[in-house]
Length: 464
Image 1 (cartoon, rainbow, N blue to C red):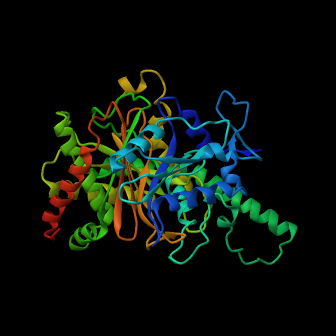
Image 2: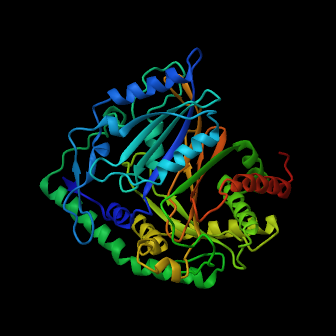
Image 3: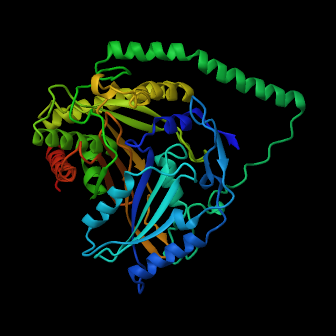
């Protein structure tokens, strides 16, 4: 057994029957030349099923017994039941994207079994366009969205002639180049290093008070900054939710967003958030439910570096979506000011302090399962918007081209919809996951996202 970090334990503690806490993804592959979709699906399934050497990340599950404060330790299974974890499915006719989204929706609302390692892979055939889908889900206590996408990327190659494709849990994918060997240190030097590390960590913990004061001062002096404990408006999204989910996804050419960003000297992320803002405004108007005050979005910010370990390493900022503003240009300006100020505050903090800020911003989620909390407490934010970086070049699995990467994330009590975006070489891929009953007609948001992008192109005076 091994110690379970507090963040992982919190994800397990927050999970209920109506609130599964797993991250997922839908990937689409085009079979290589001369290969049918059924042949590709069988190749993926057989390769995954036969990869019986499993990295510990995919063998761990919460250890028993569970204490009053939740799970404290991980245990590791020696044997993996691949009949359970690796699944083969064929869509019903006519095999449209609608049938694929229905399949993902039905499976994404069910809990992962805590008596087994908490992950599943579904290899899906039967799409009328000849592609093969891979739907995966893994518990958030094991990895966050960035790490989950990393695990996928490691199975892929930039070379379409490469035939070394394997399963994400293959230990060989996790091995990194050994770090340069440092000169051996004596006992006193090692004790000094340990003491220095401990002193540094203690300094950061002591510095939390100063960091909190800095955040409070920024909130007081700059209206663009949305601090922790800021009250968001009550909306139809801020309600208790059931376990049923609805999933929808669509992609847009990255060149369209980049043209807007270049013309206005902003980031692609700014454009993406503005698309979400315009779409949410239009959707709530459709539902006759647009509040007078602007929606507030929580946006996870990754603290991962290129060589750190897979797992959870994130903070979060709050962003004013300016949904009260009908003018898309003014709405965009408010969003830019809000995100820049929040990121400026995060950059001024140490990693420990940044994670503490994120914990403060996400604190209401820990109370969402308390009876009456969501229904009677003002929300701190209305939805979560994430941007997860994907592969920057065309990628292949045994010659099959990756043609789409769509995140499937986590709606929560009080935040009935989640928007997660993955950027790839040529496209920005939106994955919308909503509580099925509480977010009616979720798919209409895709149309509103397209309309919002067109509005931003007019603001920037660039052609579609």
